[in-house]
Image (cartoon, rainbow, N blue to C red; front, top):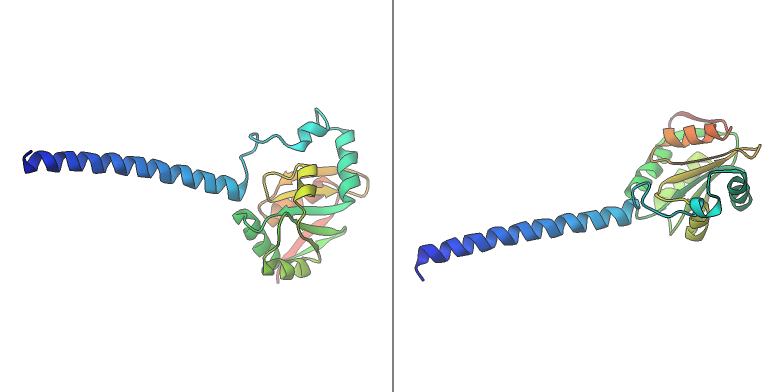
Length: 179
């Protein structure tokens, strides 16, 4: 075999190998994103669908019984959006007229302790079973339960969205400013 033909075959093989490796890298990135951020909305079978066919009073009562009134934010140590939310909570002063709970499905990072203290929140660890029961997926997920039993649920990657979810449940929550 002459050297020119060998070079052509080698170049073709390397180009094919590059395409295959690029495809593998894209698949691995998708798997990593899914593990860190959860499945996209609409792609998971949440207990919300199992508790009641439509969002109704029986599901609201079930969630209210499990959590009690207040703003409950479900987070994970391995979730990038959750870490950005914790950083934002650490930098922002919030006032809440109800209890604020940070439920980590695993063990929280050290900054979560200072963020909880800054926000006046109660920090809970290893709450994955509770998160599953209330349908907290994808994370960060907020369940706000007002004093009259009104329940609001939302994916909340920013403090502003947590405030909106709290207000939807009839809870007064304001961002006072940067600390």
